[in-house]
Image (cartoon, rainbow, N blue to C red; front, side):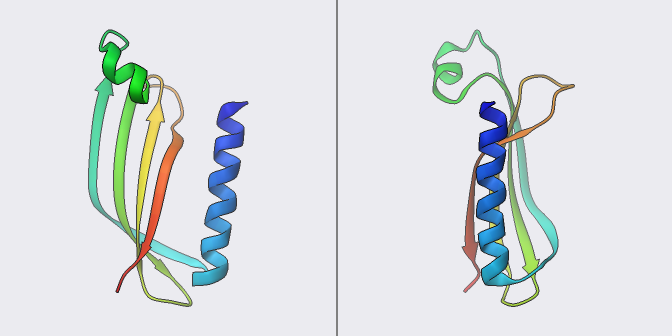
Length: 94
């Protein structure tokens, strides 16, 4: 249930961005970093959760306005599970 509500919030926020910036046209990955946090690393696991964490920074292109940088923090519990969006940010290019 948490995953569904989190993904719904991300979808609503992205819909708001596309209303302002237009249709999503494509993206380019600028940076990607993946870190595995084991449950045994209690400090990190308690802070951000155990699992596979991937941080992406992308340059996104939209139809109405200039490009934007989109940052995503994705988490999945194991290699075979699906990613969920834990956090994201959006910043229009100057």
